[in-house]
Amino acid sequence: MAENKMKEIFLPLIDGENAPTEQFVGFNGKAYRIKRGETVKVPEGVYNILMESQEAKNRAIREKQKRGIKRAKDGD
Image (tube, rainbow, N blue to C red; front, side, top):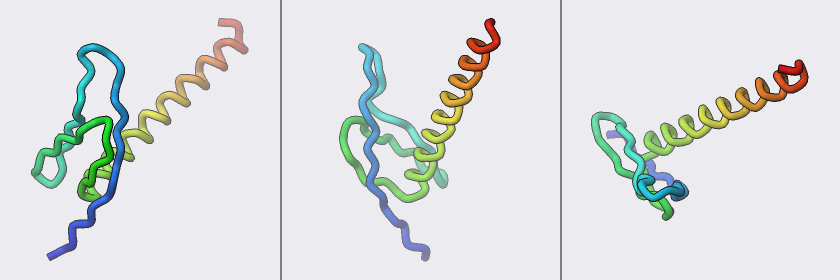
């Protein structure tokens, strides 16, 4: 049976009155609710999903910033 490696992760709290205090992740047929605002251990697959999600968000932000800079230079 494959060893299930655990990794530590910290998900920051989100501002706002109705902001979620947990992050849902589905992995290998299981549901995980990751508490925000504290360091927790999660299976490596869950960790990878969260890291890939964050990187996708970062890429989207960078792309949006690039488009905004281009529009400003072009005078739109």
